[in-house]
Amino acid sequence: MKTQHTVVVIGGGTGGIMTAAQLLKRAPKLDVAIIEPADSHYYQPAFTLVGAGTYDYEDTKRPMASVIPQNAQWIQDYAAKIDGANNTVTLKSGDEVGYEYLVLSPGLVMDLSLIEGLEEAMGKDGVCSNYIDPNYTWEVIKNFKGGNAVFTQPTTPIKCGGAPQKAAYMSADYFRKQGLAAKTNLVYATPGSVIFGVKEFAAPLMEVIHRYHIHFKPFYAPVKIDSIKKEVHFKSVAPDDNKCTINEGNVLKESIVGESTIIMPYDMLHIAPPQVAPTFIRESDLVNAAGWVDVNHHTLQHNKYANIFGIGDVAALPTAKTGAAIRKQVPIVVDSILRLQRKEGLSPKVYDGYSSCPLVTGYGKMLLAEFNYKNEFTPDPKLKQLLIFDSTKEHWRMWILKKYILPYLYWNKMMKGQDV
Ligand SMILES: Cc1cc2nc3c(=O)[nH]c(=O)nc-3n(C[C@H](O)[C@H](O)[C@H](O)COP(=O)(O)OP(=O)(O)OC[C@H]3O[C@@H](n4cnc5c(N)ncnc54)[C@H](O)[C@@H]3O)c2cc1C
Image 1: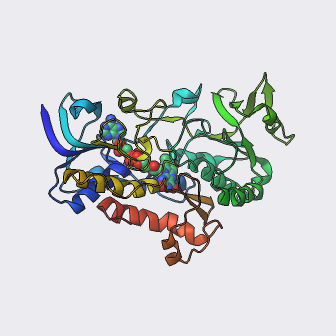
Image 2 (image 1 turned 90 degrees about the vertical axis):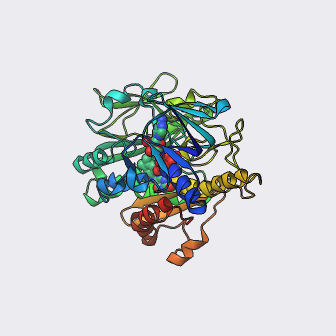
Image 3 (image 1 turned 30 degrees about the vertical axis):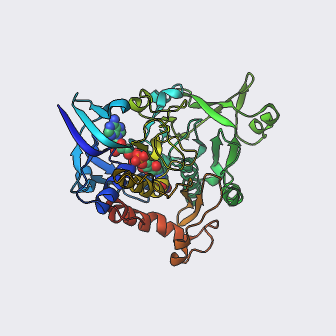
């Protein structure tokens, strides 16, 4: 069977629902269909707080039916194949859906197979991830009695690049409160060279790292987990002159094997898994060489098919993959689709790469990194309404923003098509 719609949105997550809701707010009679298989929609930014025992997982979840706009048609199935030349999506059921305009927002998937031993290790014996099961992270943290607590970041792009370090800071604060700091080696290991790419935030974050006595390990790429021996293996991705970073003579017992493998024992291990675009996207002709949807960085229009747009985590955009970025992408795509329908060309508005990262640095403390493609600090003037005048400094008001105000705005404004 084949159905036909004016606009088809793939994915009923943050980007898909925001797009459908904004389209229908501006054009209530527009024929919009959303292809989305899941029964539930999650507010993922709160997973960090769930993993720190300060937010209920059940509160991150709402029925999908409650966020799908009333005048959109929900096709509850998986998109399995996209034929851009014939404007058709094939569903897992075999049915076909034709479109005039297609918006891709199916997010990304965790690929545990890219780290040897991770599939077997995940979710037991202290190996946890806020990306997979934040409730288990909290269980691990609560039961931690001291030893090596290791937090890692993979070599692939990930959603919310700051999330792994947020998990480290929350754990460090919790261990300090429990009197475990002296018995704990907390390691933050990243393949990157710096703690944060925006210079205004690198210095305050390094202060946080020093405050908690975190062992910061740049150029560390996790490659293997030996869950029997409770060891994580890293490859040093440092240029030759940086080898010194693997051997700083601290209390951590690392062994260096061969040229550049570092083996580190762990008592708890928080992993940000490697992340890739969903298979049906990677297998399509819509992706760039790295496997992400190949769109124009400023218009979000597909580089080959003019009636396809890509937003959110799946899009090949050189900025952080966050809901905050999507908030700025969606109005541009919506405006372009409505204008293209009227034969007026693309929206004059362009996306400058805005993204933001609410960096919780402990219970009741946060700083808010906002930036663009050029890694320039671009604070939202609306913060002043909350009496936040310098978001590079930790403040309890930003914690209130993260824990209460942003979830409220998400469910009640952004999911309803309001541009906030
Ligand atoms: C631990 C963690 C912390 C985070 N912290 C923050 C934060 O503080 N601030 C922030 O702004 N962002 C944060 N994020 C990131 C943010 O949640 C994502 O960037 C955002 O949800 C991406 O939206 P999306 O629409 O691209 O994908 P998603 O919201 O993931 O939605 C994708 C949807 O597509 C559906 N789908 C998948 N495959 C198919 C298919 N074949 N056919 C049809 N539908 C399909 C899925 O079921 C899903 O509903 C965090 C994420 C995590 C995991």
